[in-house]
Amino acid sequence: MPAAQLTERNPEIAADELITALVPPPRFDAVRFRNYVPNPEEPSQARAVAECAAFAGKVSTARVKKPKKRSLFGRGGGSAGSPRETGPMGLYLDGGFGVGKTHLLASTWHDSPSPKAYGTFVELTSLVGVLGFAEAVRRLSAHRLLAIDEFELDDPGDTMLVTRLLRELTEAGVHVAATSNTLPDKLGEGRFAADDFLREIQGLAQRFEVVRVDGPDYRHRGLPDAPDPVSDEELAASAEAQAGSTLDDFDALCAHLAKLHPSRYGRLVDGVSMVHLRGVHPAPDQTVALRLVAFADRLYDRAIPVLVSGEPLDGMFTEEMLRGGYRKKYLRAVSRLTALARDADRLRA
Image (tube, rainbow, N blue to C red):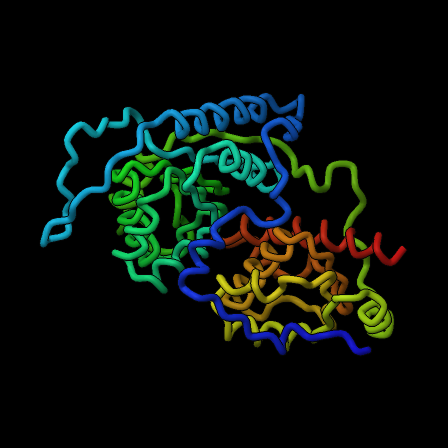
């Protein structure tokens, strides 16, 4: 039987599902602080475990604030007897890719009491877009913790939106934990005129305690390079042999991704056992490249192996892209795709 195609899928997500789906992805279901293995040569990793565990404890012991009544002009009136939280309400894990920041973020989420929410930055901004700002604030304010993976500010609109959202949530008593490859006061740098929004970016930074996580990319320590691409014939044979797999032309998939909001990419690959891509080549422009980054992240979250023909996965982003403001995003995607390509190679062995 011919393999299914991702380009034939058009996933939809209802508004209520956007809230209930805010949990760690399958790869991080079982992660906990106890199974994070710090690199002994990188003392910041052991410190990060302790800091994250302490933050989860802070969330657990914090008294839940009563909901504020909103006035005609949208400002809440303080609730009598509500304690004032001392210090930042946020924890910000900063470091390179492949040092286990997402493992630590998910562990913080697992160790914290409900109600709580976990999502990527893209999923968070999509939630606001679908529900509207006021409704998103109302629903998320009921949570004790909001965990945000892959925190990035790629444009001024996101900067203003997220600054206002996190201000509202932290003032409502919601603790926020986030991961990124960029310090919070450097968000947006190299991507847009960040100087024009410096006040908002600095205001956002003040809400977080920064915890640094250093070290080499654990996905590739002591491992060989990514497997070479296979022929189109081998690709088709693998797709037919692997139950639940998909087979798509790379260009067709790129065109299909353009029709879907990135928050739907996870649903696009749900239930897929292995992804096969025919004719991989460098992304033609930055817009396509950033969609591929988001797609790679969702494949990695779900531990879906990837087999390709054409050019190697580590050549998906041009040298010019790797020198630009999104460099860290592209390198993270290459790291994750390489790990998934190795998984595919093992399945074929």
